[in-house]
Image 1 (tube, rainbow, N blue to C red):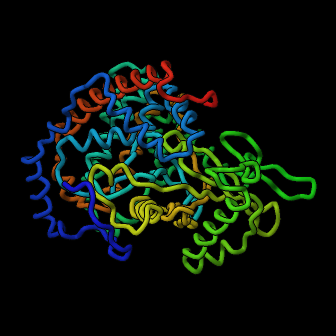
Image 2: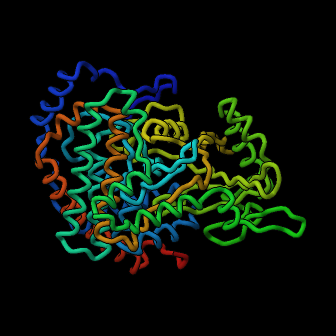
Image 3: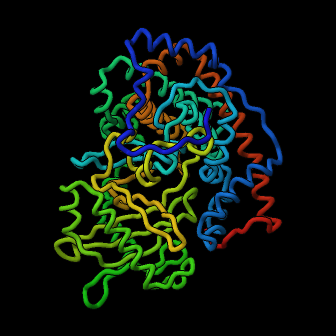
Length: 483
């Protein structure tokens, strides 16, 4: 296994076809992988207390981020073991790199926890359920993704106070859905796999049918939220109208700070920072396909701000641009988000893309059923040399997240099933789904192993969280009051 190889140009980026052959040889490859990596071995994990090296990984990561936002990052992670887990993809990637794998590669999500899935509007404006975070995507072992997902289901269940039986049902529903979905994809033609998608309305109706017509409140709420989230709503929430009719971003530090309220950012005057971000956006537009460039050029820039998002991403450089089309009542809110080295790249191998922005965008296009039509990448030159990579997308595009803070037992299990289908679909699109399905098999051996691993690694997460909180309480780590 390699921790780094030279990068290739983007035209070399295609799924690895070397493992492809007829279905029989691919199934044999999957079954043969059981000898090198028995399914039961995937359940092994021994909990270690006091892992200073794990916390050191977080501090190493923070050293590359905006210093004044590190306290906010740690404050959001400190809320619960679940929020801590959401911010520690780097720790788990290091741990997973020390566990057995089958050597069947896919385009990994890299941070496939349950909160990183949700509802989106397709280009035809119908709603689908899919993966929604791609910062860590890179080629890697399929096992890493399903392990991170199944553990997140267990940790979410603990966070909600569910008993062991309810958590086990949710984790097993997740793992079984992944296994069954992969088996179905293995029987489908390649083009059929590529075009498969989860229509949200139909899927919810199917779940409700299983419940005898009882409404799935968790998924219905997410559906309604997604229908309402677009650039108009984003502008209403994040901006205000001046007396002259122009629209500007609100000042809500530290989460939202307009560019003209940031002085001396990383030693850069506002005027120079504005010039750089303008150049960043212009390069993004130049990189778009001709038709999308024609669309974007119909919009006019009104304002720019720094916006803090999520948990794991806090401290990365992220900007939002407020634009208008025909008039001020036709807004478009775009996000420009920093892209750095993926945790999968660090502990597996370097992704074959020319930049990290391209890695995120191309990875998303590979594994997501339907991507934002305005998705693109760009970079900015730094004064001291080198570049900083970004990807660009619409801030809100019919996006709806599952309310995991209030999810019930049935809602958690159903959400886990949806996530597992989306993950299996991503892996079938980009890897050898026939071999993976053959490895998984028809029985419960894989399900048993992942349930065992999920419990053990959730215990590890609890132990790491306790150490993290202790360091905050002893002022060894900064923690902002702005949570």
